[in-house]
Image 1 (cartoon, rainbow over the protein chains, first blue to last red):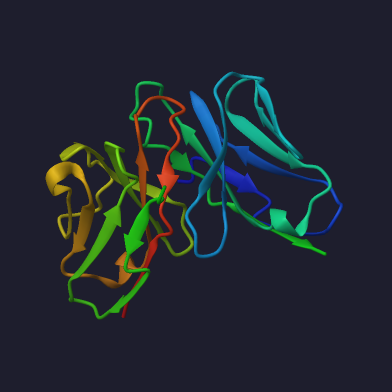
Image 2 (image 1 turned 90 degrees about the vertical axis):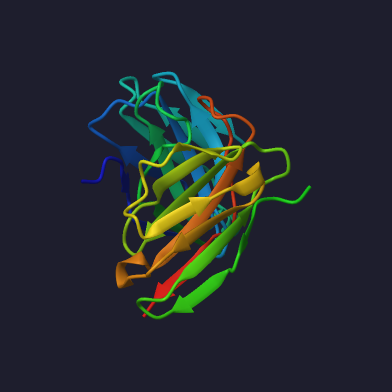
Length: 114
Length: 115
C-alpha cells in the first residue's frame, strides 16, 4: 500500500509555464520534505515543512503543507529547463519516529522543454 | 568538502552471487542510512547507523542483507546470495543529527542488477 501518492507521475511542459505537483495521503505526518533528484544522482533536499498550513518559498518554488498535515503541494512559477528532474516528497508519520525513517512517494518526473 | 560517495556506481551480478556495496558518509556525520528503490517502487528505508551501532534495522528485507559500519566511518551493505528481486538502486545518506527536519545528504546510489 502506497502511503504517499504523488501526482502527476509525469509532467512535460514548455519553458515559462507554471506547474503544481501534489503529494497526498490519508495519514497525518509530523513533517514533510520535498527532494529533487537528477539522473545518476541522489535526492537533494529542497525544503522541510512541519506546521499545518505552512507555506515556504524558495525562489520560483512554493511549497505548502496542508492544514491537516496529510498533503502537500509544490508549485513552480515560470519553469526553466534546469528545473527538469524527479521530484520526491517524503513524510515522517510520527514525531517520535527516527527522523531518517521517512516514507517516500514514488515521484513526479518533470521535463521542461526550452 | 566531499559529499556522500558510494562504490560501485553500477554492479551486474548473477543470481546467487554476493555483492558488497560501500558508502563513505560526509566526514563527521555520525548518522548513516541505507535506502533502496526497486523497479517501479518508491524509495524505502533499510537501516540507520549511529556511529558504529545499528539504531534501526527494521527496513532490512531479510537475512540475506548484512550491513556493517566498523569504526563508525564508512559502511558496507552485503547481499548474499543475491536474488532477482534485489535489483534496484541502493542509496546511502548521512546526517549530523537525527532530529526532526535534519538534512540528510544522499549519495549518488549504486545501481544493482541481478540476472
